[in-house]
Amino acid sequence: MKPFENGLYLKRLRQAIDQFKLIDDGDRILVGVSGGKDSTLLFHGLTQLSKLRDYDFTVTGLTVNHGMLGNLDEYVGYCKSNGLDLMVHHEDYAKNLSHDNTHSPCYTCSRLRKGIVKRIAIDKGYNKIAYGHTKDDVVETFLMNIIKHGKIAGIPAISKDPLSDLLLVRPLVLIDEKTIIKAVDLLGFPLMKDLCQFAKGRIRQDAETLIGQIELTHPEFSDKVIQALQNVDTNRLI
Image (cartoon, rainbow, N blue to C red; front, side, top):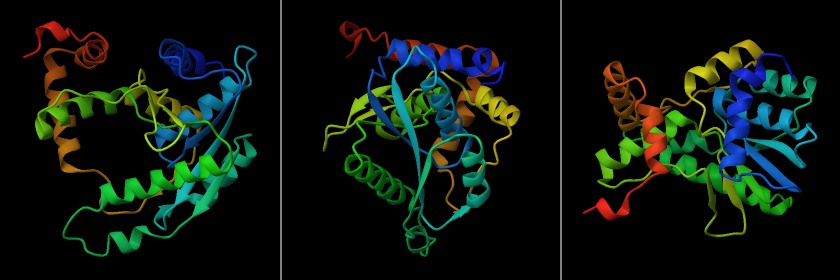
């Protein structure tokens, strides 16, 4: 563990774990690793914490290579050299989904990838899956649900998979993207690249733009959304 890591992001990671009770002694945690900055820092951070005497859990990363990942070999080599236990599952389905470029196949691709991760977690005896959703993702999802669906909802820090006994945890929900970018840069990770043309949807981009505009005059907006999602006054809803 490098000296800057605790102050930069590990303190917040531990805060989320303790506050939302995300990890218990004896947990076997499978981290969904896309190879991007968020899941990479989560994988690295949890691996660092698993070595501390304060915790008793194991961590394994899983990358689903859907056929459109760049820089995979360098990423795998970096993990091996730095004590990160990474599995790679090859299932080439992304090109078929994106063949018809008249609409975005992102929803189907995401469902397939998460289904593969859950299946492998169950088959190999993991009891929790960790995903790299960040504070920014929670706030963006909150706004997207209002804009697109007319409902109030974010992303829970912990939830139960409806079709199994797996628990799904999101330890990065108190860490923002700017911090993650800085940490990954300082740690020197050779990130993977998603070569799919449908990398980010328009609604999420709209939400990012709106957050940026709000934070020009209200810099603590994202922090307040996180606070509000834990402090809902149900007596004052319609």
